[in-house]
Length: 150
Image (cartoon, rainbow, N blue to C red; front, side, top):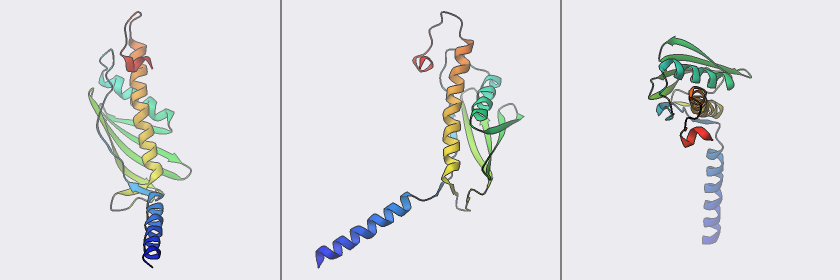
């Protein structure tokens, strides 16, 4: 009898974990003061803006300058869309959720998991573009940081 109760509890706990682990909604992922990767040449605000825009274009985002240090982003994918604010300095950047359509956004800060995936990919792409930009500016024969050589 005790074995049956423990087995039933384990089954219920396992099912609960499986269902919540596969949830389509997740807390909205905002990037807060993510450091700009260290590179061989200090980049200007215009350089950082270019890197962010290129990273966005590579991943389906349209990023429009609002002012230097501030971009507004939009993505539309299969009837699902999202809007973000990107604020940046030569030292760091932040990506904030502004709004969305058909992404199951809730008033308690949850959203369909694809949104978070898009933001993580954009975040990764920004780092890659910053490194690419710094490599293109490096004088011939310059020794680049290890991260830039990968």
